[in-house]
Length: 197
Image (cartoon, rainbow, N blue to C red; front, side, top):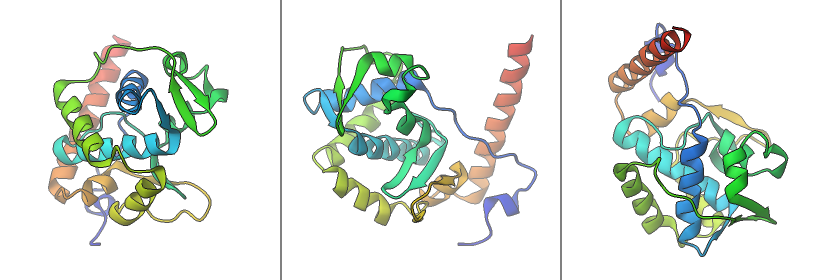
């Protein structure tokens, strides 16, 4: 790969689109409901990641959000991975009210409206499920190992995956990525000032 984006544009502070628990819960409900109300959590993590990856490709932003990490079983949204763990229920109250972990699966406890997800995002979910919904978790793990160039074997640990690396691997040009990152920085600064006002 040529010089990294950080080397080419050192003046830009790279940031992560934050995890959106409400959207994540609704996306998980979308996928689980199409599988009878229960889904293997490793499979869900892969579907989450592939959803965000496709959204990055189309719009330069995710649906669920990160930060993202490379793990042995492929790339994941780190907060989504944490939300699955019952020990983290207090950190993810909405998620924990909708899902129960049962072994390696997540079971839907109650139905919720998908009102935080846009029509365009639903189209991505439909596309991802159409392509990957029938795959096993291990098929998806293998797919992300082979087809997600931003993933590298972390050798038993977890390694951060910067958003700009995902954007590079889905085909965006360096200049496009720089613009996206700069816009995100400006938005964060403006939002921060607004909150303090």
